[in-house]
Amino acid sequence: RRIGALKDRDEVIGNQTRVKVVKNKVAPPFKQVEFDILYGEGISKMGELLDLGVTGNVVEKAGSWFSYNGQRIGQGRENARRFLLENPDIADEIELAIRRNAGLIADHALAGSLDAEDADKGEVDEASA
Image (cartoon, rainbow, N blue to C red):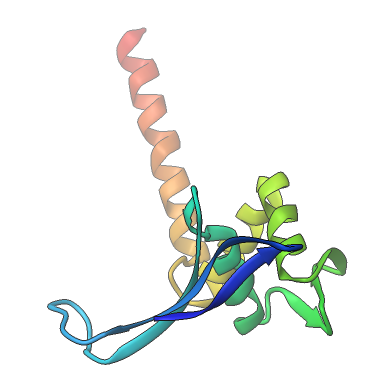
């Protein structure tokens, strides 16, 4: 269902949408989720990063200002979303922090995979020599 319109000044640029999954093979039924659908772009990943960041205390929200690591990234959700689009490195940091907080990435697992990649590169170098 459509919750409301997303506007950039007077122009409507998308819809805020609430979806309720009734029947699903891989997840519990009757779960609800809200996200933004932007015209010409699709589901807004940066909008989701902001929402999940605020929920997970990765992004601070004070009034209408959004901040990350003490740096203000925008006044209002649309300006903060635009900032993340223009600065993908900061968006990647926020996404990584959200995934860590959710337990989807473990620090020791990352270190182990990097060591395995280095070992694989060493084996290739030895084979070509």
